[in-house]
Length: 264
Image (tube, rainbow, N blue to C red; front, side):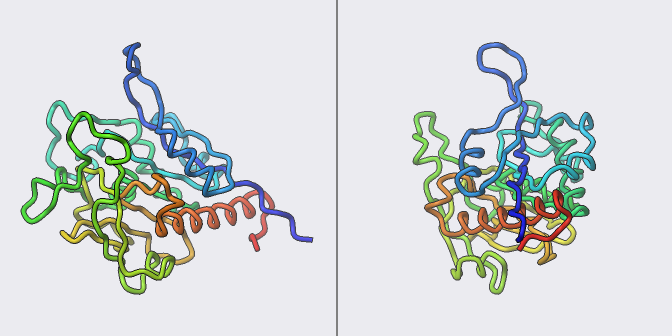
């Protein structure tokens, strides 16, 4: 009798942010990142604090079955990709940068699945030597991919389907859905510029912004999307399919890690 695969341990990246009333830093992520994962993947989620070198990346990766790299207000600092310096008032999260960038490389080496969302796709790209555009809407010929800038905007409007993405012919995303294009939400200011080593583009917006990519190894799940796939993934064919594929890869990793055998 085949032993059932154990529920995978999935690390979900948290962000450093200032507590609203107490003026100290907390480590947190939006609850939708956890609840969407619980709904879509039968797993045990664990928050990953943005503490840089305080964690041993190799040890961490060896004990986990997958990583979800979430969005966040802070942008990856430009010194990681030789970009121009940020303005003084730019929100940054150096502890997350220092932890997640080497973590991505360690996951690839150890064949541990990674699903990067919004900031997460940018982290995957930078970790593999790619660069980022600081403000896409300031570039000639590009659209404004940020969330609505009004203060009174409702959540449903923030995450509404905003624009089409074209899926690469013969790519993973197209094969998962059978579609050539999909509508997605859009809440980002930065975006992929130079593509990191070993990455291939899976989806692009009409103005040429990279909206999806993967590591070019069909035996691994290292995938990033620029839209917020954690928002109601059950209602979005591609987001749902990506969570399902990530969950399958994480369960296979858990089976191998715990029992030393491959999942069936």
